[in-house]
Image (cartoon, rainbow, N blue to C red; front, side):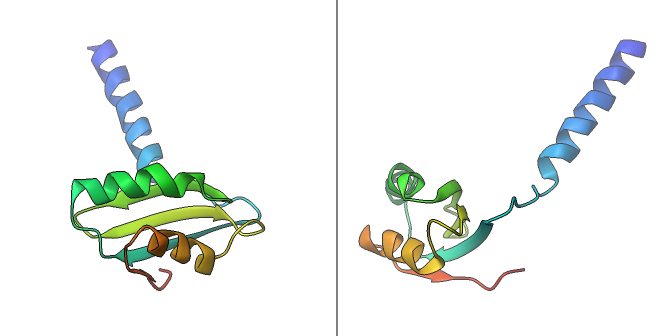
Length: 99
């Protein structure tokens, strides 16, 4: 019983840590783009190319919402450059207002 309780506590901590939004480091910024992606191939194309763009530190593609989240180093790139990188791959990309 004690082992089960310890396991549940550990899982709760891990879950809370994964749900909590990470703090941005100095010079980091984030943007979410609404895109025209519509298939798994589009998602794969973005995931293959965008993470290697200068300054990109993290990226997540949500096919269901047609969005691309990017955390980047603001000293190395800009929202406009990231938008152009997505558009260069053949997709529309509009930055969404920050929440």
